[in-house]
Structures are given as C-alpha cells and as structure tokens.
Image (cartoon, rainbow, N blue to C red; front, top):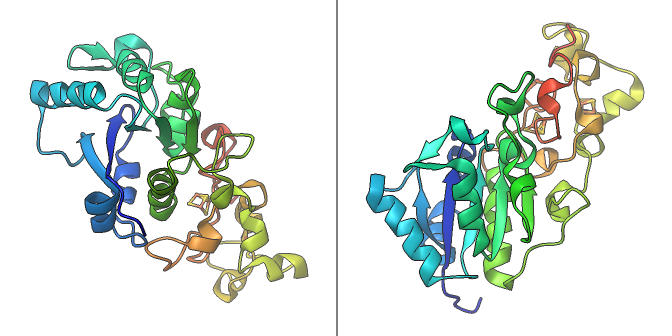
Length: 263
Ligand code: SF4
Ligand code: F3S
C-alpha cells in the first residue's frame, strides 16, 4: 500500500457511556497500533488523550485551523438540549456545529450518535438528539450499534483514509459493506428457525441444543448489522452464538420497542 499521510481525527464525546471508544480500541483487524500509528492521528478524544482542560480545547481548535477540510470528525453519544451539557463553557451542540463545519467527513459512532440511543429513551429527559441529525451540509456516516463492532469502526475510518472518500452508504447513511445483511440471514441458528425448533426458555433443552432464540425475543429478523459475519472480540463470538437473543442494538429506536425479553 502506498504510504499516506495520517489523517487527523477529532473524536467528540457527548451523552455516551464510552462503550464505543472502548470497543474501538479493541480492533484486531486492523490492529489498534496500526490504526493509531499508520492511519490516523487521534488529536482529541476524552477517553484516552493525555491532555485535559483548556490545553485540550486549544489543541482541538488548532487542528481545526491547521487542517480545514482534511480532518475527520468522529462523534460518540447523543446531543442534549443546550442547558444539559457544557464542555469548556460551550454547549455540546455548539461544539458539534463548530467542529463539523470544517471537517472532511463526520462519522457517528454508536446508536446514541446515530439515532439518539439510550439517552433519548422515553421520556427523553435531556431532549437528546442524534448527532447525525444535527450536522448539516456534510457527509455523515452512521455506524450504529451499542456499541458498534470494533472492526466496522476501524475499517470505515481506513476506507476514508486510504481512498480519500466515504464508503458507499445505504438509505439510512450506514456503510453498505457492513449493514447490508439481516442477522437472521447469516445466523448459525437459522436452520433451527426454518425447522421450527426454538428455545422456549433460557435454560431448557432447546437452549442447550442451540435452537433458535426467536421465541425468547430475538430481533435478528429485523436487525441489520455484521455481528453474525464478523462476530465480536476478533471473530470469537456474538450475542446469539453465546445464547443471548439479539436486542437489535443497531436499529433506530431499539431502546423503546417493548421489552428486550419475551419470557
Ligand atoms: Fe434468526 Fe435470532 Fe433465530 Fe438466529 S436466533 S435464526 S437471528 S431469530
Ligand atoms: Fe447488537 Fe444484535 Fe449484534 S444486540 S451486538 S445487533 S447481535
């Protein structure tokens, strides 16, 4: 691969649990060292940067001024109404608007940033909104998931760095490469679904036999994500493989769609 200059990345974190950042740093392919030392220059991120306070805020502004149109803005977490979250004396919304203005592209990591997420669950006390919905006049890539799969995040960033353009997106703004399949169509329990063999409780014989989890509330039939193909933790497993129904954590409004468990 031709040697490319590392692309500056500013990673803003608003109403989030830091799960997206925690997932990101566990990428195995490409490994995190490769991402940080060869692909991007992570200039600002509350989770792992050494700087803090005014020095960190000044550095964010310096990168925006030095690399207009050349840095990638990553946003984690939802954006509350202005009175609920201030960083360095500025509201989350103002920081997002200011930082997005000169970004090459904006990438929304996680369901909170992409759709509103858990902070937006009824009655949405902080007026949380998806960061992706608030950015205007810029390409916004949604990488939903609670959290997203590490390799989906790092490979999307790698695509931008290597090709200098954003990947092909579906109608909801998600990279087609990772969100084109229903989990149900790639699930290793699918043969049991087709045969009408279901676990009826978490500890019955059907569960022990690895039968389909549909009757326990699995949302795989309506969820688009790469969990069944890429799996988690470097390809080790995914929720359904380990015996837990999919709760549709990458789908819009998954948090308000009835109970996660049917029994
Ligand atoms: Fe579909 Fe879920 Fe059953 Fe897998 S476990 S076949 S995703 S309903
Ligand atoms: Fe989320 Fe379902 Fe994958 S709950 S992690 S989309 S299996």
